[in-house]
Picture 1: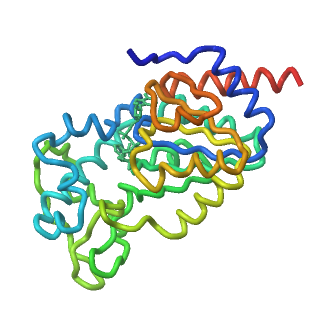
Picture 2: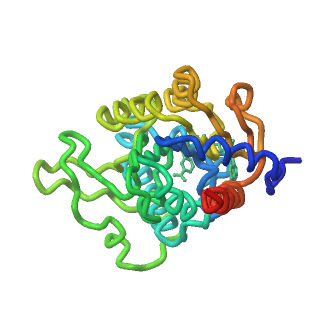
Length: 267
Ligand code: NAD
């Protein structure tokens, strides 16, 4: 049975690493947002729109085949993440920033919660639900797509045709990275740089099954820097992480932030 509350010994070991670090990289996945009520990928398979296979919703060909269905699924997800509040683990990451020269948060999440909670350097390598653009030319869509629902709460399965780009008439698509697509070039370059330059990396709530993001902790480890994993379950990262905090993101990050503050106050 995975544990929610991390072992104090693991928290202390993580803090010892962080006390010596100047440059911190943080890699987060869907587990980071679970305690804010955003389902993980696995949860989504049984929850939101469970009758559809998410892999069939998250491709360009699926969008071309059925633009209303795919567009509506993303508008529904956006509407749900706008309703959630970033949990205390998000805020702990922001609090910890003052102890480092630089903290770069690299997230696979598309929910925008790191940015909303105030993290300064966020790289959204899988895109964001908050951004839409046109399918053919990539022109940004600058209206709020939730206005299409006229402010009404949407029911699962309610369909909206995507609006058309005002510049070229092509349908508007979500600004997330779909299966088979390249990751955004500039974010990827900065993420790889941050992983290679970091003195330590916190890896939070990722199953490490989606590549190339799953390679990032290995890059940090290969440079001789330390890797700290926060996850209630064992993942492929656990085999080489320097410390594994077996607990949830909110509990472990809060415990680390409080203990780091305490140790630094002792001088
Ligand atoms: P994943 O669903 O494959 O794995 C989630 C991981 O989080 C698991 O290892 C699980 O043990 C762990 N976990 C669950 N609850 C946790 C908690 N409270 N605290 C800490 N860890 C917890 O997610 P992934 O590795 O990010 O890969 C899935 C892909 O799906 C990614 O590309 C991601 O962009 C996308 N996705 C994003 C969101 C989001 O934006 N919030 C949600 C679902 C899926």
